[in-house]
Image 1 (cartoon, one colour):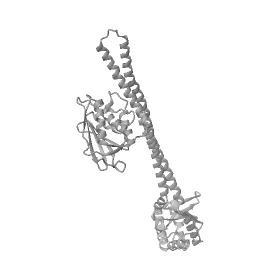
Image 2 (cartoon, helix red, strand yellow; image 1 turned 180 degrees about the vertical axis):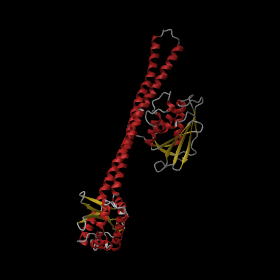
Image 3 (cartoon, helix red, strand yellow; image 1 turned 120 degrees about the vertical axis):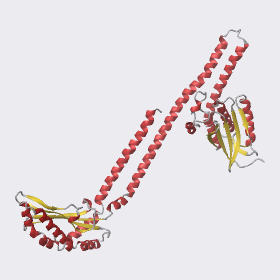
Image 4 (tube, rainbow, N blue to C red; image 1 turned 90 degrees about the vertical axis):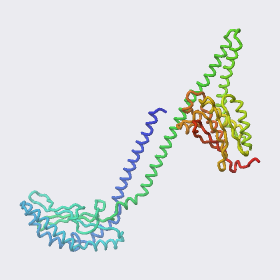
Length: 472
């Protein structure tokens, strides 16, 4: 897997996740807007109908029309004239008249009792509150045939508030906005609005949308998980493909080397003069033998790894200390002169259920690796026992190169060749075969580097209900 492929996937995943998050955020926002627009619309319609019935022919509230006619209408002509004549005190006059008018409206209003009555009659939520607001006053200017604004107050401007305690107003909680007009004594038109809502409207809407939020988060989490799993599977597949390619190339090289050597040595024996002395014949014979053995070992490794998947373990109950001694005696003869094998036996033997062939292969491969990946002039390996709770642990420590930290997680992967394998022959199947045998036996293994620089393997043999009978 090249670096471009490694880089493009995180970027693609990050970009897709960002787009998905923005899209879901946009949908949630639109859902919130829709909920906000339609929130408690049924209650607002009831308020609108009941309020219309309550005021009947009154312009604002019961008694409000009389206040309007006495507190503001008589001064409209004067105000209009001051404005059209551009009198210096026109603005001050208008502000004074409106302040007095709105102050009287606030004092005389009966909106609190009307609203409470509507809430009870219509069986609405008692938590609802309202705001009654005077929005705008316009006078008709016949000179230019248009309506001219003489007073205007935004919904969030308290100067136009007549009654109510609602602080946040919007188009979504406005019950109505009415415009009332008359021709006498001068054409005028004024507009007022009624707002009804909960003080904590936004929080109520958000709580109502909790299922939507949770479902959205769940969808994002599932998509992220699936994307991550897909990415990991893709990475693993690419690694496996690269590993297979590397293995095939390496195997081609490893098999070709001994075959070529054998062929060259054989041709040398054939082509040489018959007077060739015995010493040279013996030397060529040894080369042929050594390379043939190397080729045989590679073949056995590959076939053993393949055959292991089809084999059935032949489980027997054997004294583990005695069996370990016998295997090590055989391996001492095989690797005589290549490595020193030191064994510290158990104080008291114990019966363990295992497959003798698997156990032999485990020890054989560990010792073989201790020889191969060891630059020390005096190669050694020590095997000893540790008992931990319900388990017996075989500790295998060599004085070799040790394990690079970047290799530890992949060390038992088939055909994997780590940093310490550079320049060393082999197919990367030794520790894979060890791990496969351990898995078949239900045992586990742990690796760490020793203080002296070598490698320590801890093989844990279960001594629970499966392997509990002791040998006296």
